[in-house]
Image (tube, rainbow, N blue to C red; front, side, top):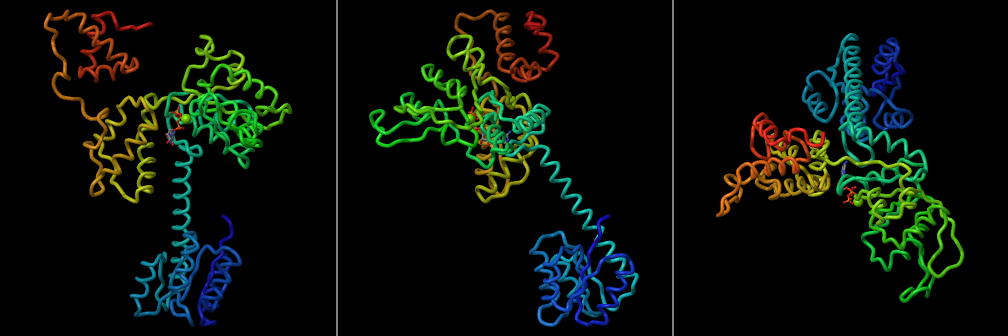
Length: 455
Ligand SMILES: Nc1ncnc2c1ncn2[C@@H]1O[C@H](COP(=O)(O)OP(=O)(O)OP(=O)(O)O)[C@@H](O)[C@H]1O
Ligand SMILES: [Mg+2]
């Protein structure tokens, strides 16, 4: 155990020396102070594990010392000594954050007991806080939150890749956290002191994209009234995030490829190349391999970007993360809007877990913020869920038998097929969509020869 340093604050020098010598005899390092001012000097000199102070001191009293100590954090244990008959002082001290009190006069044994117990409690509190922080750390990578195995694996991958300059392609549906992953790659890299520059190929008009990427000399095109740097140059020394790279128009793709290969850019209207040192992270919610195969994306650029692909899993494939993310977004909405809400009721949470989340984490974040904003008396209500998530309409769901009738067998088969589709092949969920017990659902799948799709 590391050496523990105690501070005894008492204006009566004889009493102070006596107490200090008892504590020293037990092996502690003990500093002494005769006033609040001297005590603060000692605290400034080096950290103290425990302060044992008299209430009554010349000038400022022990309670004021307590306030000073607590203002510096919660790590220091604090024991107040009060005179016999002033139990109110002891109570006030504990209320103000003291760990314990000793009523004078006290026996040596009582002193040692109070000090040992208080130090032990502090150690436990520190340990608990450390463990709580560790749990939170494990489920978080910079701003990405997730405890599902697929996310944990992703975190380890991102950490590893952050130590390299390799080009990374982030793939995944909309709202799965591609941009957060790109920022994490930057934040954990040796480039974190440099810029993180994002350029979104879908958000800039095609005619301006080249200037946006590579810059333009003054007068090089109509409206270029001054020389401007491109995003590549702006990202020098840092990370360039090519967002929605699948949307990049074909004519611009060879120029991007060239910049990536050469590590240099040429501004529009310039002849000289400018070397740039950037780490490239690209993102797409399209299947770039398929786009390349179909001729909508250049093969050579695809291979250049696809050095390492990291896939962000959709939320419906890691439902176990929903409660964790809900807590995360509730905290964020509470801070943002200055409100507090009670934990979500289990049936509501269950509905959030079971929903298919086509918009992934972004959609969940919006739904949670809405519930928090519309909460009343600190309670969120399922009535405030958006329609897409609200309870399924009771009854026939608007279905009308066509006037000419229908073939029951075909209709049933079609219902099963569409439910499977909607549920992404997950049978349990498909059964829920049709409000059928799982066994009854399987029986009907068998009947229609749908039981082993594509196996
Ligand atoms: N794992 C996560 N933990 C915490 N917040 C997340 C996570 N994933 C996404 N978010 C939040 O969801 C929103 C969307 O994330 P982000 O912009 O990174 O998604 P994206 O994959 O880039 O989406 P798009 O393809 O639509 O651009 C952001 O508000 C982000 O804070
Ligand atoms: Mg994005």
